[in-house]
Length: 225
Image 1 (cartoon, rainbow, N blue to C red):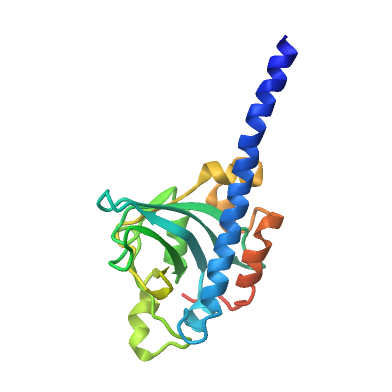
Image 2: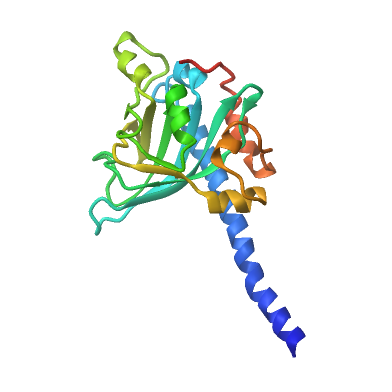
């Protein structure tokens, strides 16, 4: 009898673990798809100089906004930082709330953000921080090259973009809270691990991260600032 109950419990729980694993794989794959599509845009993408000098790059695919709840926004994504030996394994992150621009209506949008300097990278090592309050941020410039008019953007700690209904543009993330998804990182890497360990290159990436990291390797430049 006890053995039957044990087997029944295992059969009930196993699909839950499989669903968790599939969710993580799907999140990294979607992040890779979003980033690849945006970076392959001929003239309307993120400036190459920003990408080559970026300290970290994060992607939140399908950020959701509930139209019936004012300001209710929530999404999960991934972020990787540049290390001495290349890009780090991706850390699972959550982003919540904030004034994420008028472009986003009820529904979903893809968000990409570039951490521009050491101060911005340092903020990522906290358990959570608020964009615009704890870290300076602004809508990122769009195009393949930077101009003198983007000096302010180069000084911002975080530059952010969104893609909704096929429209790609710089967008503000003021007031949004960004935090490490410690629970999902534990599931991905099989142990308790901090975001700092992951982003400083102390954790080996999983096979599922290969497509995302392959795209980032197109930008092997050095950190600036």
